[in-house]
Image 1 (cartoon, helix red, strand yellow):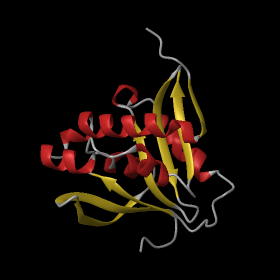
Image 2: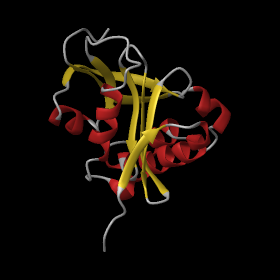
Image 3: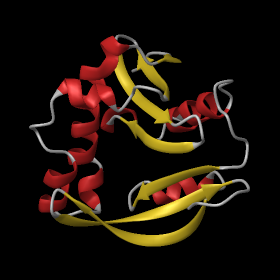
Length: 162
């Protein structure tokens, strides 16, 4: 069986619903290896509404990866270089999609800083980020809808992860 070619393109407002569904599905199917059921439900609850989700894409650099007619992944970053979200669907893991999305973000002309990229990586995503050169600045415990989650403040390049 061949997999459809994956194309990366800029995020469009019409992608918001599919991105939200992919986010929920990925957290529940992939990140559940490293987080408890309570943590998963706090992180990716079913009651998040598309308009609120859409607001998080405003004033961001964002791209989606599309395989055939389905969304395979998405990523968004502030113009200052904070990578907020990078998610690849459970069905498209380990196909180079996350790296391609990140490359598009890093090469986007709207970036206002070249002093490094910061992110807060999940336990699940940490090995990917380390494999492409991010370093752990610190392990942290964050509160998400009243539930504690472990993640890692990470940095790529020079600069600080304040």
